[in-house]
Length: 384
Image (tube, rainbow, N blue to C red; front, top):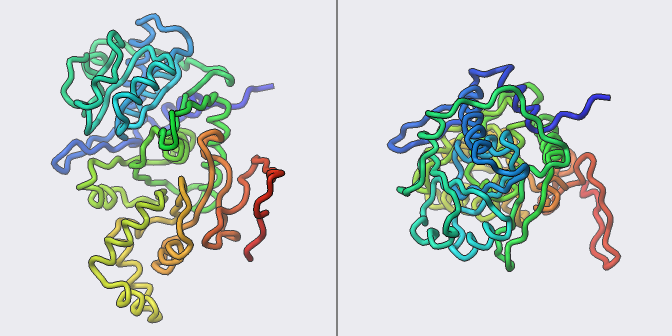
C-alpha cells in the first residue's frame, strides 16, 4: 500500500512539473521586486539544507526563524525541512525576553534572522553562542549571510523524505494571554490540514483557477502559516506576493490583486475607516442603494482597496462584527468568517456558500470531529 503524500512530496512535484512558474514575489524597495520560480526557490533551499546538514545537526533539530514575512522565510523553512529539521518561527514584534524564552524552551540549534523593524531592541534576547544566519533584507548584523552560504554550497540532490510522524514545526502562541505555548505539528498533520484548506478554497473559487495571494499577516501565526504558506505549498498553483511595509500596503495589495484574501477583524475595520475617510458613510450607503449604480460604486471601492479581483475573502483569529461582514458584502466582496486554533493548525470551522450568515463561523470542515462541552453553550443551528 502506497503511503499518503506529505508536504515535501507536493513541493518536489511542483519543482519538477512547473519549475519556471513564479511562486514568490518579494518587494525590495523603491517599487522594485524580485521573483522566485519554483526551481529558483528550491535551488536555494537545497543549498541551505546542505549547509545545515554540514553543521552536524541532529534529526529533528529545532531551527528558528525571526523575521517578518518574506520570500526567504518560506525558502528557509523548506531548507529546514529538507535538512531534516523542525521549524520554530518567532513573531517579528516579540520582546527580547520572549525571544530568549522561545529559543531556550524549544532548544533551538540555529537562528535565521530576517526582515525586522525592532532588531536593536531584540538583540539581547539572542543567547550567546547561538549560531545565526542573516536572511536577505535583514538589518545589518555580523552574522554570515544567506547569499554567501548558498553561493559556495552545492545543493542537496534527490528527494529527501520525512516521516509522517516527524515534527514539521513548533508553532508558538503570541503570548498575549501569558507565556507563549508551543504546539507540535507533524508532517502528517500539517499536510492533511493544508490539503483540506486547498480543497475548501478550490470548491469556492474553482479547481483550475490560478490563485494570487498577498502574504502579510505574521507567518509565525498559525492562520497565515496554514492558509497562505502551507496551502500554497500543497496547491502549487498559487503565486504569493509579499508586503514591503505598512506605508506601502495599498500599493502592495494593488500589485498582487489577490483572488483570495484573508485578514483579521482589526484590519477589515481599518480598511472600512479608510473608505469612510474619502466618502462619508451616509453618502456611500445612499449610492450603494441605487440599482446598477450601486454595483459600479462597490466595485470602484473594492478596486481602490486592491480587492476587486478577490473571489473569496475570509476573516479569522478573532470575532468580526456581523454588520462589518454585511457592509463588505454590499460592496460585492464575498467575505465570510471561520474559526480555528493553533492546536488544530487553523483547520476547524468555516462558512460555506450555503451557510454563511454574518455572525456565524460556519460548519465543521471535512474530517473535523466536533463535540459540545458538557459545560453547556449554544449549539450550532442552521441560520437558513
